[in-house]
Amino acid sequence: MIEQALLTNPGGRGNNEDYVIMAEYGEEKCFVLCDGLGGHECGEVASSSVAEFVAGLFRKSGDYPAFIDDAFLLSQAMLLDLQKQKGMENAMKTTMVVLVVTPEQIKWGHIGDSRLYHIYNNGMSYERTKDHSLVQILVDMGEISEDEMRKHADRNKLLRVMGSEWGNKSYDKSGVLERDGSSHAFVLMTDGFWEYVHENEMMTLQNQSVSCEEWLRNMEKLVLERADMSRTDNYSAICVRVG
Image (cartoon, rainbow, N blue to C red; front, side, top):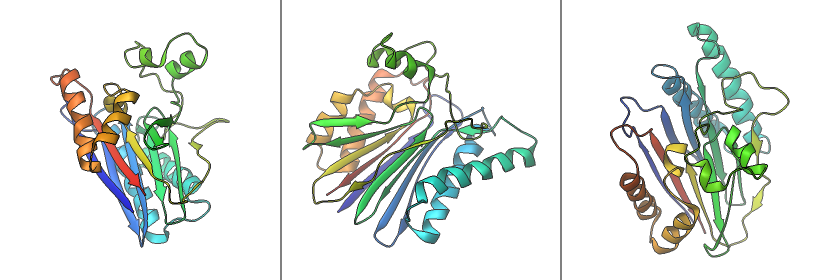
């Protein structure tokens, strides 16, 4: 069983630089979430182009051993070429999270500060991707707490994204999670969403919700309650349950 719900909202902004999409290949599913950087006609083009590229790749071939690598490497090459075509080198950038679920396996990868949370152990435990950001380094060094990341002045300073030339480090990918009949829940979030929803709330609401749609809407209520909707960032999320 695979159940999902997707949401993207411009928040208090005039345009939406976030992009979410699901692609299917037989019984396999691929979920992509991106948060574009660079402003109007830059970030939204980067996020939509990259997400649609990865979805198109999946629809043609489904999953294969190198799919996560290809999703990042090939879409990065496409985006760099698009920048050159438009004369906008280093201007069109985006984060990206990719989650692939097949009857046998679950795997994911990410770049930037859009996150994937994996909730397991009957909804009582979680792990998350590590942001490629300055404030994540501060957390790792013990200088600030996880919660302090959400409001830190340097929260938007990213170290790695799609559309920038990569050095020795680029995207991160998980190991492969074999499906063994146990239940898993996942939520992919842009920073405009996870800034307002805390981890204990994600797990509690996941346990209380009868569907992914209900889980997602209950978390969105927290965003709407806590954010200044006259100026808040775009916010997007994808909820997935795997049984």
